[in-house]
Length: 151
Picture (spheres, rainbow, N blue to C red):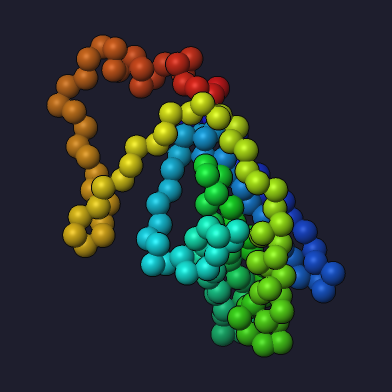
């Protein structure tokens, strides 16, 4: 969809590390996401979150914190391994910053709720087959942008 829905902001922290914040308003572009709750042991304001740390043999690293609040998908990156000493306090700062962000407000508050995903016994998403045939009204609704709640 061609609706701008993602915003990136970059910052330099007082200690010199580079921090990037990304926000995606899924109500604006109609997208949705699903993540296995087992993979989100962290919490941001009580919401499930995931912290991933990637480090190269050279020692270069990036820590990535992500979570969903309502229809907003947030990501914070910092150019350090926040799990390694002596940068461990940076981990607490990263979480404190995430918790300090203003509550999200959807761009399209009257958006119809996204379709719920279904999963098989192995946890893989089941893709529903398209209908064998579409009515003219269904086909027009799929391509008529004027009928979408947010333009």
